[in-house]
Length: 163
Image (cartoon, rainbow, N blue to C red; front, side, top):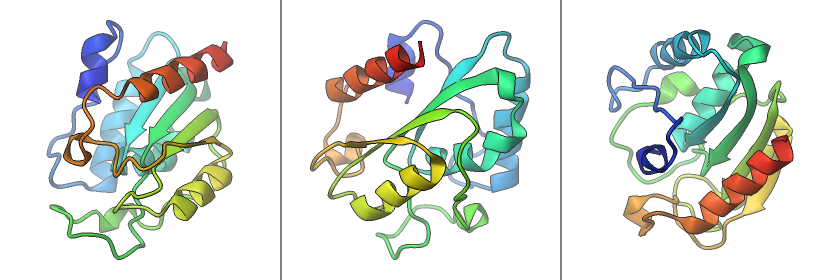
């Protein structure tokens, strides 16, 4: 996400107290507090656990603050995935309620942290449009992704659909 932030003048990352100690309440509080300070509606962008955070926080953010969410490679915490560097059990269970704003999920067919089918199920539960990102791993640096121009084009299309 920081790579995208560098390309977009009006983008910012919601800094968390500790990226390797994800506690839902702490992370959700940081997101909602940052959203309360925004002066214009935003589009949230989340990757991996950030997608789950956005789904948890969605109904705690004032409706006039968010116009959409672009969610990339959501994490399936209920699945037996490769060892994580952190304990994210406080994020369980993943929300299954529709998000109160338009959303889009991009998922890979070979993501070690979430099956393609599970990502599709999450997208459907959240009321999101769904994109097959192909064989792209977890769509991060570790899976060989740098700038990910396909993602930027998809994001631009999502922004256009939002109007």
